[in-house]
Length: 257
Length: 210
Image 1 (tube, rainbow over the protein chains, first blue to last red):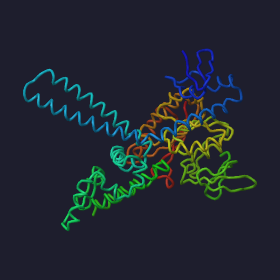
Image 2 (cartoon, helix red, strand yellow):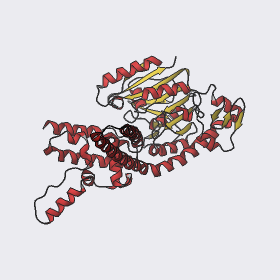
Image 3 (tube, each protein chain N blue to C red):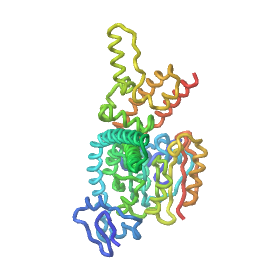
């Protein structure tokens, strides 16, 4: 049995790594170590053990953190796009399967069914990944509207930074640009127009759960909190208690009107 | 508790270090203290409510969900002759945590996922205490895994549970009961209580591994 330790390998004898940072990165094992890594390390490094461990840990983390910060929102955006494609492919396959079914039963249909169920599990995996990354990089957005809508907002704005810079009014109607510009064009001509109240965030139950004439109020409120959430996510990255509570309260108020 | 002193109703930790997150620093009896408000830290809230955990100052501690290091910084003042392994998987707060780790000799920062202890199994030694504040739905499972990997027999666990993270719709009291029951399958519960008014719908659970 060979064990991977932050300072090297152990299989009865200790082989000290030449590059502590890379052995630190690979210090994974299938199960708990049957010995205490500290006691072993103490024999190798003596009283320098913690100093070296700390130095390596800090160097390793510093590099990794910066790298992740740079690419995390891009990753979520790529995942959202992939999710759309997978869903589209699933729908297309389902349609073709139904078309076939109408004509005659063949074994091909089972191949279709298998492909669809494969795509289904792929979709689930993408959704889970979106959820876990979103909780990490945008805990407040995720707390307010869930990972799916939050990720969709990131995708629309291109990055967390852009989202944080955007005015709440833009967050409120993003996803409904077509009807917004249509309405604005009509207004310019002096005609009556219906300006959209909400875009992507419409899918949130707090908005959909209200009668039509109150959805605009809720959307405005939710968007303003989302704007705050995006800024906290960008600069601090920690969950702010109370944001969700405020939104829920507003929803309750509007529901009871 | 070791290195903790109350000034009125607010605890502070004796510290050689400066402010980490904007907390007040002051002198008392020739010693420097860092204010530790119960509103910012669940561990402080627990102390204010009259509970203590026993720490001698030289423990090995595994801290899961260290975030930007607010509570960790005070725990590092308390366990000033021990070692704290601080695990956090979110990059942004980790940056702030790194600042702390660079100035404190007893903090080993680990940028990793607490739900995958095998990934840092060759780094963390056997510990006397696991402190967990992760707000994850499966936080009991995460705790169990980490204690299997790293907690000494007889070692202690202090976990903070937020009802909403476990189940956002259920009644808080029911969530806590379910968590306590789950925990008591693996550990011996020493004490537990709610953290109101400082932290809404939160409890702490202090327990030990048999």
